[in-house]
Length: 181
Image 1 (cartoon, rainbow, N blue to C red):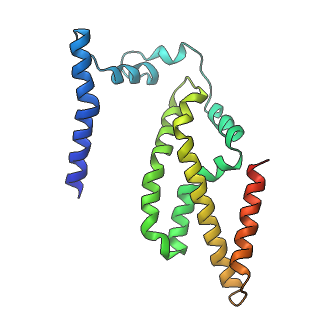
Image 2 (tube, rainbow, N blue to C red; image 1 turned 90 degrees about the vertical axis):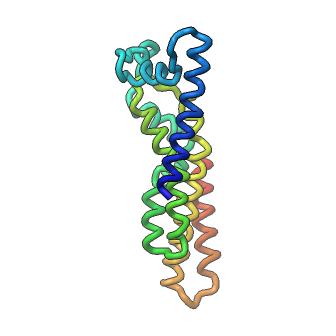
């Protein structure tokens, strides 16, 4: 339950923040929290934080343009994954149990993108850690979209044996054509 989650969070904090701090303090001879210094430098929290301005700044559209150039329609599919999942959970009862799991798996993508969007200094390399989750989110949105098309065509053409395979194939071919352009 919740106590176990809090215990794991505290243990992780001690392991991934406390232990490096102890080691860095030992080697540098003064109290040092390297990750804290990184946050102060880039996000302007606390001690000035003007380091992010040192190498130039860019508006939030910098990442939007880069993702659109690198991923094309896949980026749009990725960002619509959570709304599509919530919508599908309403209309397709079979996926309700897995929809929250999918949202929890994809949440680091949204959190990371929000964090980097808030930074003044932007570089494309900062987003590379989100690329696998962007692809996963786009695949999930595509799967949900195909499931919803199948459900809709099943309601419209209940007796037609071709409906599921034909519509899914048509939508999949359309998506492949759009992503390869």
